Length: 353
Image (cartoon, rainbow, N blue to C red):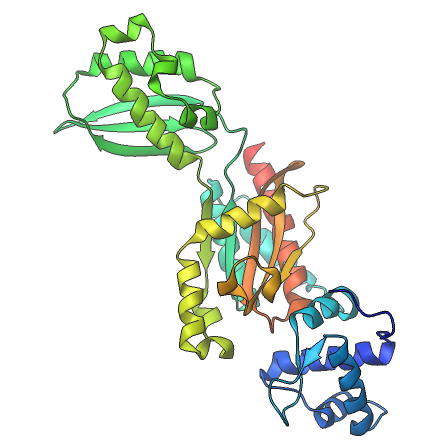
């Protein structure tokens, strides 16, 4: 929604918009003209502020929720505030050093690191946080193994960029040698095959006259295919939903229920992040923001997202971010997310190189 040309966002209007956003963030209440003048010691009268309120309303930046109320920022108003008015508050060097110490050389697995990242972000911002490890279009099969358990149970193991394993009950009992023969054959044929290719092709594509001599081959292939489907799903770590539910907006039961329902379907968030990652122009942990109705999920239209990519070397590996109310403290949230993303990149690059 572009600003109308005849309505200029002057410095005074930027100042008043910033004051409305700031006071609404602090109080969760509509903001009146007297409060703007008193809180920010503006050298203008409340009547002048009300005139400027009228201009900002016509620009679509603020609105009056009901008669005789003050004003609150619109989604567009928050967007203009973030892009043109907000002054980012740099993080204290001591905080950056503490985060770096917490994330460096302490985690042996990507999962452990991303869980720690979520905790740090949620604790610092007091919002809900998340980290996404998207499915990798280039992920390939690196190894296959089977381990026999009692009662016709078999543990199938698939190594891609992470290890996936699961126990299956099979319809017929085969001996260890048959399973080992199948594993050897599959490793020879499927090594470096894309998981997406493995998922989308059936057994007849891989079968040969040799495989008909051992009926375990087709069964082993199906088990590996099921693991590949799991491995190719994005992984999502989430923290701090209770912090977000404590915000005044979500004391409304219907809003809270919508938010909880979304939180229980993390793959929606993963799909959104994958689309953002695919459009990244360069390997920099610059924050991406989606405010209210900019988020493509109606259940999150009372929220905002601040997210940033993390990298392994120059390769975009995933995203970390926070979910908060539209009344988010953007000036501290944006640098926090960018800093955490940068430190996550450093830790992952060191871990995986």
